[in-house]
Every structure is written in C-alpha cells, then in structure tokens.
Length: 158
Image (cartoon, rainbow, N blue to C red; front, side, top):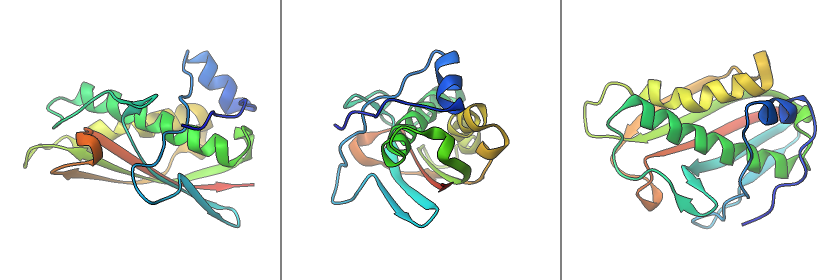
C-alpha cells in the first residue's frame, strides 16, 4: 500500500471536519494502475470497500445502510488515489464528473442506487457543487475479494 501525501486544500479541511481520514492507497488486485491521467481528465480505478487491506463488507448487500457505508469506504479509497495523483492538493479538483457504483446483490434487489449514494454524498460534502456528478449504479453477482461494493470515478483536475 502507498502512503497518501499530506492533504491540503478546502476539501481536506472538510474531510477533517467530518472526522474522516484517508487510508493508504490500496494495492491493485490485478494488472492495472490506481489512476490514469490525460490532460485535465483523471480516471480512478475501481476501489472496493477495503480499509488498510481488510475488506470490511463482503457478500451481497441486503440493506441500504450497509451498502451506503461500504460505498463511503470505497469513496475514501478513491480519494486516497486522487490525493496521490494530485500530490495531496485536493484544491486542484475542478469537478467530479462521474462515479460508477457496483453493488453485489441478489437478483431483483431494488435499492442499488440508494446504496451508492454513500459515495456520491461524500463527494458533494467535500467538493460542494463540484462534487455533484453523473453516475451509474449497477447490481452485480460478484466483485473482487467478494467485496460488497466497488466504485470508480472520473475527475477533472488542474
């Protein structure tokens, strides 16, 4: 795992005010990078609901509260990768353009979008209007490490 740089900027202060910290950037569970950048566009690879290497929620999500918490952890991992890409300066974020949420569920579970709100709402809390984004929320049969939720993102940065 890669240590997150010292955070700077207003979003970092908001994170602190919420009593939240970022984990170290998780090691990829495959042959890919945690982020890729072309010009001002930064793609963040999907992050599962692990914290410091431990998958906190596994198996199918059966209630909204669990799904939201799992998605929030995914978002914190995304933010760790984002801070690594930006040398800790979260003020360089222009906008979160898109999040993609994948929730392990039994067929027919109707609340996948409500579970992914755990990630979406954190982005809005930290970045204000610039954290509001387009989104996809998909129910799936399985995820890496049997994680309950995975979230990826696309950001515009300076």
